[in-house]
Image (cartoon, rainbow, N blue to C red):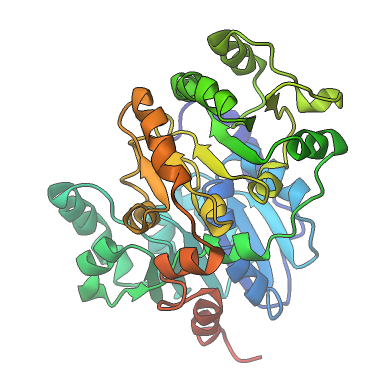
Amino acid sequence: MGVFGPRAKIWARAERRYDNLNSDSQTILCCVASVGEYLYIAALIGHLKQHVRIVVSVFSPDARDYLSRRYTDDKIQFVQAPFDTRESVSTLLKLTSPDHVIISGNEFWPIFLDQLTQRKIPFTYVGLTINGDKKKGKLLIKLMSNYLLNAANLFTHSDKTAERLKALYINRSYHLRVEECIETNRTALPQNILAFISQYEKIFVFASVHKSDIETIKSLIPELTGSKYGSIIVPHHIDYDIIREISDSIELQIPLSSARNKVNGPLLLIDEVGHLQSLYAYATLCYVGGGFGEGLHSTIEPTINGVPTLIGPNHNKFPEVSLLIRAGYIRSIAQPSEAVDALSDLEKQSFNQMEALQALGYFEHLGSEDIALQIQTTLPSA
């Protein structure tokens, strides 16, 4: 965990702003890097908060602020994660006094893990994956194994990781984001977006797109317009430079959802947050961005909604994507020029939520309720 950079002062100040963390209640400390890692364990937290207080330590300052605003719950408190230094870790553990620690994903903090072991605080890794080729994987395992040996529980949704760490008695779960997607209450879409959708028999959603996805958008828009699709573009960040680049690339002025005007053309760009989950319920097909550069965004949401999905080539870090590609529910392309041909293949694909869940091992492997029960066995008796 680095200690230099433009956000160093933010983190340093945050370490001194822990407040109201002392409690007589049993406490579980959840450690996440950003929003995605929190959403991965959201359903697990939902089970545990019925019995204990939850403190969530978030490394990204922006994510911490967003989560604090988005999730208001008396049983959950979001705090800024400190740097992995002995003094900072000691402060966090002293003020939270956790009875158990949950680490979401692959976050690896040696000093923090050492402190947990020394203080005899049980910890659980959830969603642990060891990526990379065989050589790189062996190196990661060598670095982490002494720390992982001290874990109370290890859970992974990756077959490859389960095989690599079988000597550590790792448990196979399904991808826990599945539950969060199933249980999410969709927000109502504004009337102008619903009016746009109602004009078309088929809707294509470009989800969480970046600059690196513009060439794919450019190649698909003429085909979609000719096939009588309505296309909805959702940038990952509300960045008007990207919006301008998208408009320039397809040589069209794209209406913005925030204008609340009636849209007569085949394109709509969402320049507001919070609508993507609801849009998947109306999508016929979608493209999930990030696979040509910044890192692929979640494909769980569209596939759980039964939406055949197109992605770029950079998806090796996501074991669930391989399962969905194998089932035929996701199509990966190596170049934007392949998008039109892939579109034809996706249009022939049809599946429902139950089939997507089956492909993801939902009915075969452990879920958040099973994990919560195992964690609860480590808590001291009331």
